[in-house]
Image (cartoon, rainbow, N blue to C red; front, side):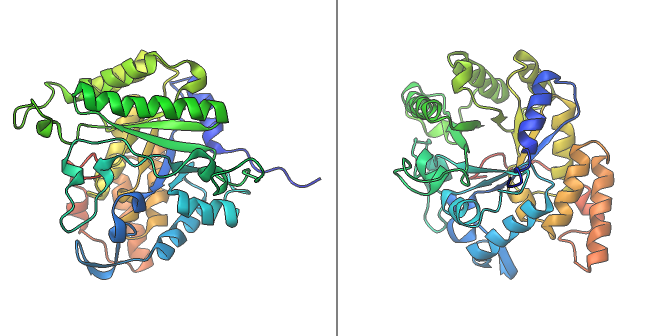
Length: 355
């Protein structure tokens, strides 16, 4: 009898978190789906590169870092584009013997169309769009009826950006409803990302600079209202949202214990920004963190993820984690982006793709 694949840590942790929200389990995801947004700059700067002009790493190097992090085994989810998942999950079988769960970004709303140069989509109110399909995420083909899809992804990210405009937001939520129905019929799981409004002051009829009075409540209330009409079979397995601060995060986490709250990382920021965000979010009820740029921009991704896991599991405080990370860089002979004192600072980092 062939050996059974290992149980996925995501499933084990989710079951424990839903059964006991006070448990200390924490789910980490590496979001390596930036090629759906940034184009050439997606893999990050090559040595000696300058932001905006490069040179940048190649997509092959980007995928090499995915292979390394999956084999390290400290994250629970690896989020990718469908094209990357086809190569790593379907063709190479990278996840077959791993407890890491592969996931695919299932839609790319216009606010993440972040081409450089004259690109302005990220500053315009978001519109719904999806490049890939569930069948393509699973097996790399539109027609999945005669293809083995056991090696591909059976988990996807669906993203919403709402701008407090009934017409625009109805179109966004209609796209999500259609995806949920298709996913339920296909037995395809998903998690739900909700961004802050990206261009609320550009919506017709809104005054320049006008925003919701309480943007954290705006987002939390929309999540609750949206999911109220969704039976269990169609619900996301967890949320991916900006950190909403202590009060609203606690209220959202306590409102419905079956809805697991996860936070997104946003911009790279300092090392303390990353470690402190995980610690703060966990303290106030979040149980998932999905970091893309914060991991990808690290001086040494494997060392960064090692310390991030220790902070997420509560075995190391955030500030001590920064010091430990700098110690690891010193052992590896890697010059840090910032001196330790600067890297211990906290700053407000962007909480959306477009910054």
